[in-house]
Image 1 (cartoon, helix red, strand yellow):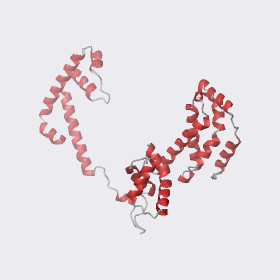
Image 2 (tube, helix red, strand yellow):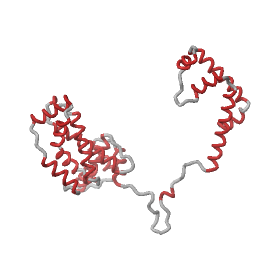
Image 3 (tube, helix red, strand yellow):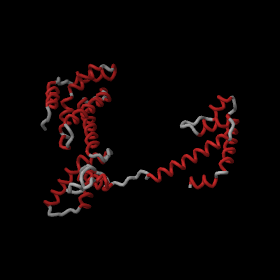
Image 4 (spheres, one colour):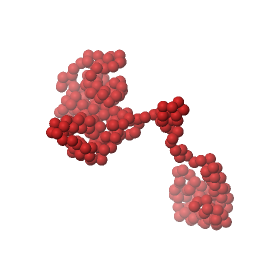
Length: 292
């Protein structure tokens, strides 16, 4: 498949001009990177196989992604392969790298296919990249046999063929058959037609509700301050450190700072809560109404 831009052509030419590694040289470079983190060896290994990455990236161009981005993702997959490759396994690096390159490009294509997350499980990947091809073949075979498949029958055959649940086929069919639409698109062809975004419900609190919430929050805060004022300095300190911090402190750490045992700090905390509860009992009716 042809590459589009001058930059694509440059990358392709550079990749085609890179050296071809024999098995012995490839193995030596892989050992140098794995055992000694030799960056020159890594660069030479990746450069030699960049043509493989570009070739695989080009196979996914039909999904509408820019070729530069596909090449970049393929290159990332190639680098991951080089970093994880174990030369002691006795396989060629190219054989190992193919899986990582394909996975990297496939993930990119699925992430950018739609603003709605398509998913990246193995069954969803198989469906995304094979469903249309399998569906076309099944429809051809049915037509040649004089059969007519309804949607349920077709989805069941696809699920069986690819080895995935039928509900995954239903979901992926919907994702592949549609495309994203702008919320700023007009609902009609009229010049004054409103945009789709204007039809979305605003789930934020309305002005009156916001005022009421702010008012109630202020009252609750005032009652809390009044309850805290009824404590002595040590009790107030313990309550603040134990209950009013984003990262509450432990009884042990407070005991160390105050020169008290952990049990004594617990007792002081319990006594402080009793005092605060008595202070708030005078506001009990209003408190219960606000918290209902």
